[in-house]
Length: 145
Image (cartoon, rainbow, N blue to C red; front, side, top):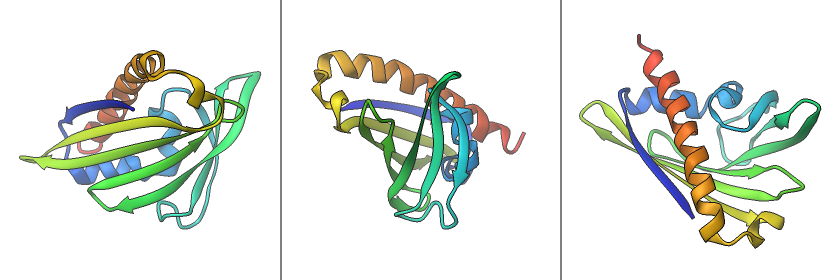
């Protein structure tokens, strides 16, 4: 499992406002290129956003579903990008004096990506997720600028 953490100069509320805005997903998730639909009820468990991954003309249309949501504390997503497979992505937030300490964990859960050894997958995920968290931080910090 790959794990990244950062301290964001924004409140937990502002960070979760970005995390739970399905339409903003492609703005901060590295690899996501567009959002096609956000189901009514998002970000409640069982609801999905429908996105595309990749670059035109090689786009994969798939979805991300909320598995668990504890507002302002925890979010677990099941991310699909077949034919590569599915992953579990978790975000855990704590308040640090008005700033948000955010931990992001990701692991392959199903499909061909589960065959990649952790020693190979984790460094790649770590780099990608560092950029993902940087983008997320910029959006959250900009909410009150």
